Image (tube, rainbow, N blue to C red; front, side):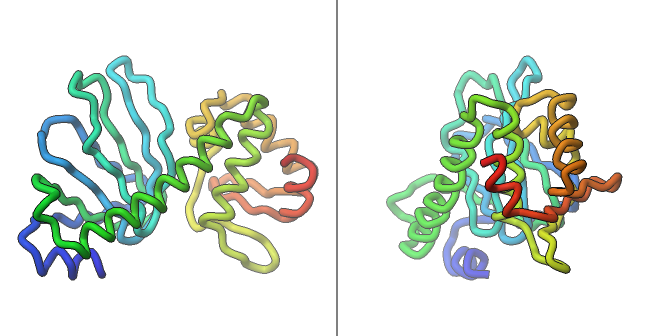
Length: 211
């Protein structure tokens, strides 16, 4: 609510959007304004899609994380696609003159950027892994640490994630992702259901064996 309250007290226009699971929103470089979106509630994963239709994973953002769209390339060779992993509310706003911005809003933007950069840096470290096995496993751990809940001594995600989506996030083909998931399932470390829900049954074993 702090974002809405602060914007309501200023002359900065803002828009609130509700995204259901699987909904997406696209951001093109068609404006000279400095545009931002902040997650009010929920989880988004963000892709950068180039004109040749190749998609690259940017990161996963949640409450009070910010997507800064002020540095989009003038060549218009790519755009951003933010996809909701669960029911998500975002606030979108533009700032033309940063010198006239309210101090509270400026502070909140800086704080949100720090939180988001920290998350991006962690993801980048994971994706730099040389071996695809560790890359997939550490992304799974990251998702559970950031977004997991404990239920009946199991760690569960609050959203569905397919093996195809894990492949998209890690940049690894689905065949290799399937092989890793099946290996962990056979060792009873994780449980991956046909409904695309994933549970970690033994996080300590997963951590010490593979990370």
